[in-house]
Length: 164
Image 1 (cartoon, one colour):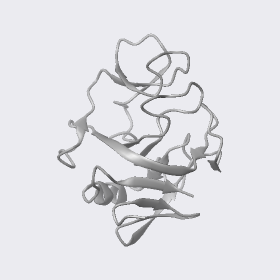
Image 2: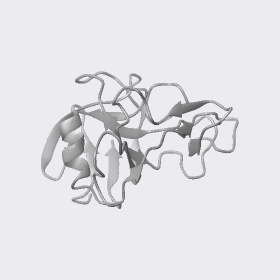
Image 3: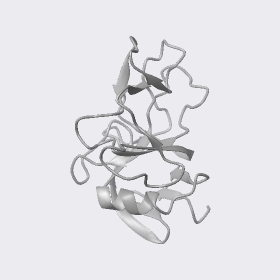
Image 4: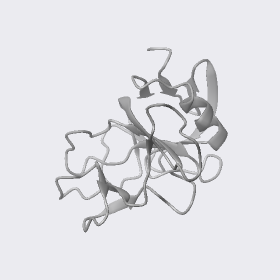
């Protein structure tokens, strides 16, 4: 384990000597992740990107990429762009990255089932802010907004998310 790793425990997320309350997928942690199961995949996942809403915050780190109005994430297992960022118009199943709510104002992208996505193994496993404290996600890790901001200001591009 490295000092720059995010480590999920049964009740917290540890990073840089601190522990933070967190939420996980409504389906719990799984070794057999499937699209739509609401589970958080167990494993060691690299943090491969950071996305943010430039209309709502300043760039949180030099390697952060702005989310634009046309940015989407493909969750269509039958399409070649599955589990990749795409742009509108996109006729296949997808998630909007630029949401009306603040859930994706700041997002860490993991390498779960990426870049060579296996159809149906799950998509868009992110670290983002929670809806409300400890409210389950669709499979992502969610944190309080101020905790997420504290973490991303110290995170390195080679950091990993470890889910045991």
